[in-house]
Amino acid sequence: MIEIVLFAAISTLLYRLGMGPLLFLIPLQVLLVRRGTRAFVSAGVLSLLLILLVGFVLARGWTSDGGALVGTVPFILLDMAVALILVGGLALIQLPEIGPELQVPRHPRVTRLAIATALAGLLFIPVILYLRSNEMFATGVRELLVSRIDAMNDALTASQSGALIGGVQPLQAETLLELVSMILLRSYLFYYFLVLGFSWWLGTIIGNRSLGRKPGIRRIADFKLPDQYIWPLIASLAVVLLSLIVSVQPLEILGWNALLILLFLYGVSGLGIIRFLLRKLKVRPGVRWLIIVSLVLLALTPRLGFLILILVPGLGVSEIWLKYRTKERSKL
Image (tube, rainbow, N blue to C red; front, side, top):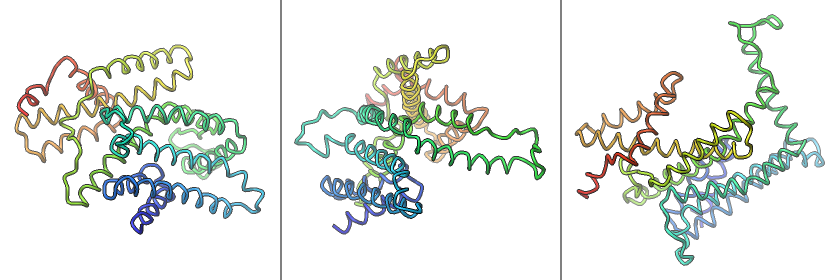
């Protein structure tokens, strides 16, 4: 019981420290590996209750009177919706192992992640519609963004009123708000997919290592998407290209999110091919990792990033026709 409370408290603390969804699932996954389903469910429910409780406590601390508390309810709702959908997604991608009595089909892990992401998108639609129609939430977000923009403009402008530095113009709040909103809508399911997959991956490794066991995770060199994933890639790419010509919302939002997810997965597959080929060429492990890390860093650079982000997923896609790793599998 002490371990359950401790891991739930750590999860809540990570969430409230500003790390939010990025890290707070990892302690729950570690606990699942270490103690099993019952401990995971107990810690998950407890962490959700703690997140809700701390949210209301902080809201009361920020308001001058009790009546003003209603203005923070949309933010608390958003917090709880994100936490609940993430914890539910973490359970869903492991449902065959968590609840064997349910006889859930054991799809590949990547397929379970895709299913969990699709369900999260459906469940989050009412939350998005509510938040977009709530004036207090919109006003709060706008005020927060304006305050950040003002701080950035102060850093960009000279001491003289209206003077510019290096030709940089002050940022416009409305323009930036529209840009942020567009980026978030086109990528929020992609971020959900990344956070869920990363939390499961790292939590599983940490949990198994803490018990003195092997990580229990497939190596990158062995990761390969099923061939049928090419069809959703083509469909999402078609929707994105169509959205550049005419407005096709909400298909545009789904198309962008699906395209980002599939490019990421094919990118991991491409990195797996590179690692396999390097291992086949008997390149030392340290050098192999150095090459992989260098490719990831190059993908983040402004000039070469776009080229890397096209070539590496393209390599993963090409394995549908060019079976780079068939010979390796025949030996196993």
